[in-house]
Image (tube, rainbow, N blue to C red; front, side, top):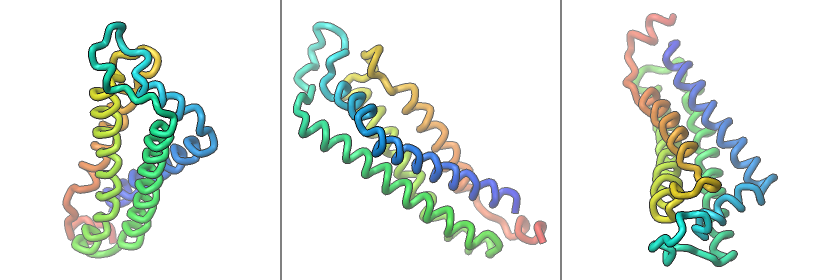
Length: 169
């Protein structure tokens, strides 16, 4: 039972994290918008950069990108909360039942990993060369979040055993 509670607590911790991220990105919209805008404009990459043709200088596209990220974070947050509540409801269920309850949380954690890896590390980091910027570089934060969420996902997907339920009664 201890492992189930630990898995549940970590899923709820991720849900709380995303709730704060969505709150910050909507109530303090301009701060992270500016970060994302500068990454897309590539205005702080190395001088003489031959990849500047990739830069996006349109405020409309900056807004589209940023709103898409907020939407992704919002969906991840909602699915994470739902996954946590489903796991809580199956806490005393059989190992098969608890395993089934983890599917939504696993989907949310996977969606989170995809955001950090695809959006921030791949598109932002490599396509828009965010790694070249001393000012507008979120690579370390993205790698940290990818690692944290990845470890949580690996823990949550660990198989359940009937012995764990019997031992807790």
